[in-house]
Length: 381
Image (tube, rainbow, N blue to C red; front, side, top):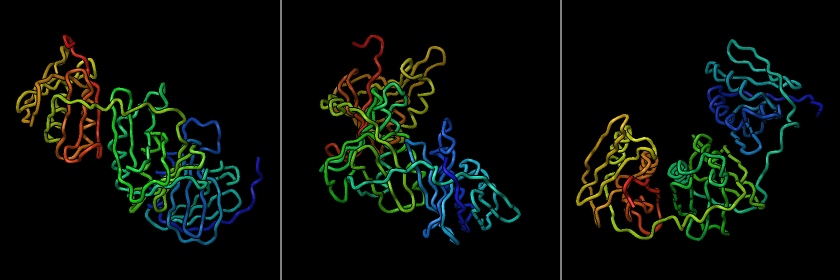
């Protein structure tokens, strides 16, 4: 075990801003770790402010908090204890002083001491080592993640599907997610073309932390890929999320995207989403799906559960092509519609073929596309 050395760290910080940052960083602390040091976060006083870092060895989160610095230094502090305590403090200046391995906190009427562990015992946090780098607007990346993330698998039986495929080519950066029953893909334009083709699988959990980690930041986000292609880093302002890359072969998603269409339906997204939300109360996943009946000028949405009851609604729609009846998992439809703007277009090819949900204002394979596998209904061949 490393012998602690006397270190002096002095800083004054706004406890409200510190509590917000701690709440974000502590999300990287595992609740089931066997390594006590991983229950701690690394607190580093630098010339730029207080740097907070936590990791579970799979995901790491770092936040920089502005502070008045007296002396620099580093220590590791029990993460959740510090986070919970600082969140209770009044909005008055919080003074932090480190003496040996005891962190002294003074704020208003509070005089507190927290026993810490030496910073030298904290795991080494990986850093980019000169690999590929992409830069894109933060708002665009967060929106693309929001549009695709729900399509990723949550079952650990297929680890590869628990991540999103990041595919950078001359066309831009494409995000892909699938759980085997649905697929979401979004193509983002890059301000500058990627220096080389990139194809890696980023854990969905890590991507789910970006919105919180980058809250309050704006401008561009840097996506840095380690030269060994085993780590990826997302940086924006004073925040960073680092993650291991999932090892494995992502399925050929292109072959799932329909190329044939016999019926197209255009309908206001909010009207359809509200309708499915109501009708979905009478649908139970694949056991009782939500049914779309498409005919000239209308889309009828219905569900019939023998134990609960039934519901039906008629919507005006722009329809081209043959009449068709197709059924879906109601939850998948709701998630898919949340990704679209004012109008959504459904491209169907019969009751059993995958259905493409797309933005009709975007040509080609750009924008957001969602693909749902239909549910087989009794009597459908």
